[in-house]
Length: 290
Ligand SMILES: [Zn+2]
Image (cartoon, rainbow, N blue to C red; front, top):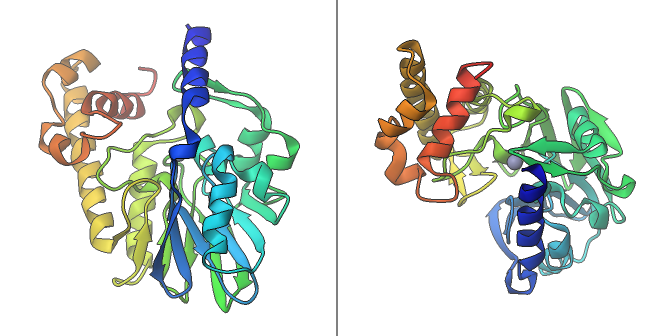
């Protein structure tokens, strides 16, 4: 089964036509830009001292990502921060690691180095050149471009190595995959993720950042604190709905049949994570051993 899954995923990756992907840069605020292509949203801080890049999507897109940054500035890449280990956020590490220093939470390096399994898909150990060479346990700040770029480790949410990145002067926060816009989020339970942790992480950011901050989600369109609150409401509501079913000894199949996430389905379930998949994630996260 694993072999079959692996084959299918590998084929899908190989068949993807990277030449059709367009990497676009949008000014967010101050000296921070958001780059979109395929995979996790990229955050970029630019200025006289060089570039700090947050996440780097997939390896085949690295030259396009670099070209999009060249359209903003001719300064060099100095640092790359990974918000977590997933391949759609770290795929360009080997390429950009030749240009700057890769920084991430301890668990990002650990998981890239050892290889992982998530949702039946095995990812082999990353090459040495793709590993973060500076890691941190709690938080780390890069002082460049008159900006404090602060990476703060979050409670285990999307994974156990999540960081949100705060650009204090430009008043922007990059949430990594602890925040998706208009899509039920994936939660990597096999690598330390938990829905309760994700709720705590989002609450922590809402309590910390100014009301007028711009918020870059891991996936989906550029957002703000109102968007974060909306996401939190959905997470809490969906969690409560599944918890209620678990307390009543409902099985996973019963919860799916009862469509317990129907109130959120129209807005959050029409993209690549459907309601049934999110019910399953919540059920497994809230009922250990299930
Ligand atoms: Zn992710």
